[in-house]
Image 1 (cartoon, helix red, strand yellow):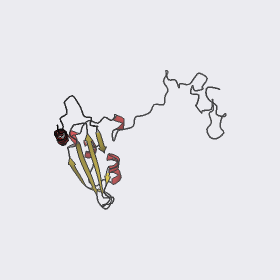
Image 2 (cartoon, rainbow, N blue to C red):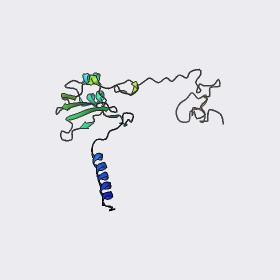
Image 3 (cartoon, rainbow, N blue to C red):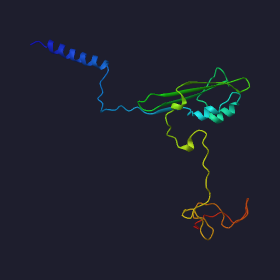
Image 4 (tube, one colour):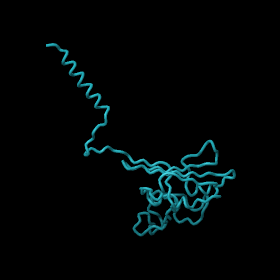
Length: 185
């Protein structure tokens, strides 16, 4: 027997597999290809954009919207672009562009918007405290009765690293006793 047919057969098989690799590949439904969530730019909300008015100062706009994602280098200090892009897995991407154009005095001359409407914004996974324009939470300074840092009856704090002189009422350099650990090492 001549080895030629075996070489031809193996070459044809290799060519067939190479050509099928160029076509679209069927992926069974039980195999899920991971696509990460992508969020870029500025998170824009309808209530923020409604606060923008023609004639506002640039600092007021930045206070409301934050630092713009893009600054036009060809129109120095006259155009800022806020881009909101959010793609969750295999879902359709959400994209909204807000362009603020300033006049020569640094005041808002025109506001342009394009892309998906802001009322269709996907919900953000941010805590309320981190949302743009959120008020910072007030910190409580009063220790509770169950708090480990509550003062003892003798006036010394239970924190061994506290640098408060025991029983000092004066303030300033050299006032009261020297600083000592609260635990009394």
